[in-house]
Length: 114
Length: 111
Image 1 (spheres, rainbow over the protein chains, first blue to last red):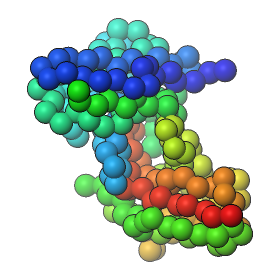
Image 2 (image 1 turned 60 degrees about the vertical axis):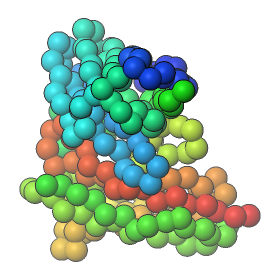
Image 3 (image 1 turned 60 degrees about the horizontal axis):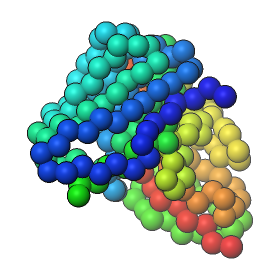
Image 4 (image 1 turned 90 degrees about the vertical axis):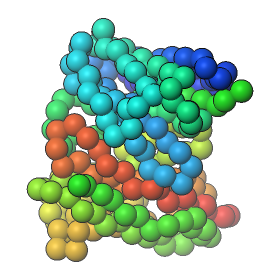
């Protein structure tokens, strides 16, 4: 079945450490997104990419970095500059540009501080 | 900028009760509107959508109508089940790439 796979499901970060969250999709979607979810809040956009080798900052990009070397992969690195990284991270994709297109989501990675 | 306001939860209901979750929005242009559902420990799943005024989205007994005059997209279900317990998010898209989400409403249905 086609879908979005995020790994790991749970991740722990030590102080001063960078960690990378994986997102892979086999839906042949062009656009991919990373969101952060905090309790009692909606999803906030971190980064998005509409095409390979191109990506754009979202609303809360500080302390995060991404790459898009392959169409199916969009990893997110949470750097040591992100002082409050504890959250649930969701990756999404969509087949084409356009405001009518829904986004498809992975099952998320929960990041915690050790 | 775009924004979505949902009724605050949590909402607790008995099985077979009627569910309404209010959602209002502020947006430029003509947004598309979505309801997503999130079950514990999972990502979001699209529940329904509407792309123009007066459209009604429906799925799994849930319905929502795009009301441009009141800038609303309220979610309703006539008879909820325990399996409907989840967090529900209203969202809008007014351009080609970005979704704006409400804060989510937690719904618990008791047997």
